[in-house]
Length: 218
Length: 243
Image (tube, rainbow over all chains, first blue to last red):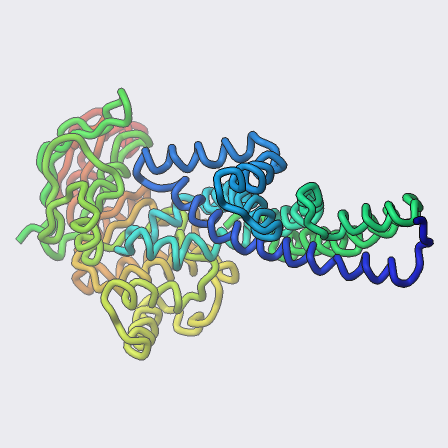
């Protein structure tokens, strides 16, 4: 039965945004924690630890996030772990996020001048204290614009989980279109909603870049 | 008692040997100037003294600690040995006071009130008491370098190392930093400084060590070494030939 695009459908679309946002937040927080740890391992003094972190990052950056999603949703269910779509989706996206944030943050940490390491080492700080009080506070400033920039990518990439039946914004758009067959109108609205989330974030990223005066030599 | 004891130290960067058997002794209260051309190994030698550069053979003892590759030993050593760099290397995200209080609080467990009093004292010593809450970016180069000296002094070191600390400063700012160092020397601080300021070496340093091609080429009381150089290399370095 073909219905028209009315208030009910519009509300359904807008309501589904909360899942897109929830998924983004879970993936970003989980992936952020994991990614932060990977970034530190990537910079560890022990060569084997460093290499393992590199392998993790490169493998995940070299396969489509869709495959990670299929592996965790279909693969694990075949192996006897029946993951609910939200869990499979957050896991896959979280793992994907961790590989990218690890690289962004590694770069930010390495961008802190090595003299800061020398000066803090000369003051008898331990490596953990150097990270905590000297290096990470400076790396954080450097990492904010690219991190927010990546967040924009993540909001858009959550649409990929629609393929395992998780109803977030994109999937909701498909469902409404199946019922109304007004693709221009519906996907136009869906696109607009994504835009309304992502555009302010992009602007924020640029603003941060200016405000934090990134690249200023010390 | 010797504060610094260096015996036959060899150090290479890859295939390039930059220290070729250096020996040097610094007694308590002495001020020693290391001079020489770029690449003569003087900065490397200084950085070996607090373990920033590892060396391949020989022995270094500083302030009662043996310099080795063990991080724990190095941390103990660095509580007793301050170093000031050419590029100041203050922590830009911390205020002047926070820069100074960081290590005493973390490595010596000093309480905030005590660390604050200490910061005030060392800042007054370098003539910057009013910059307590300033950020490094708002200070001139000379002021930043004086804060860096104060930051080292807050560790109450037995020995202070200075690595070309005025090379990035114009003559006026150089003067204010050298004045602080001269006062330190008068107060009896044991100091080793890599410097291009020959007048300062002549006036303040007890000993001057001329390094050339990774070796101690000529050394002795500053006046004698700088006024009556014996080797042709030092003669040409201090420009005596031109007179």
